[in-house]
Image 1 (cartoon, rainbow, N blue to C red):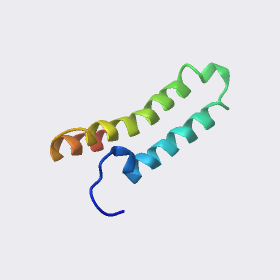
Image 2: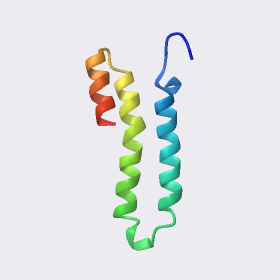
Image 3: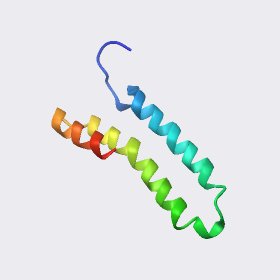
Length: 73
């Protein structure tokens, strides 16, 4: 890909993070029911936070802010 990236959706790392979210949801569906509100929920929240942080960082105006959110992701 060349040129200016206009949206976080164009970032390969964001696309890969969405794939990870889908894999986590698929995997945690197979967990025992007793884990659905503990470990599975925590894993899902953690997975969703990755593309969310990438998107939020991309929306920031400075490289420093972007770097901070990428680090959090």
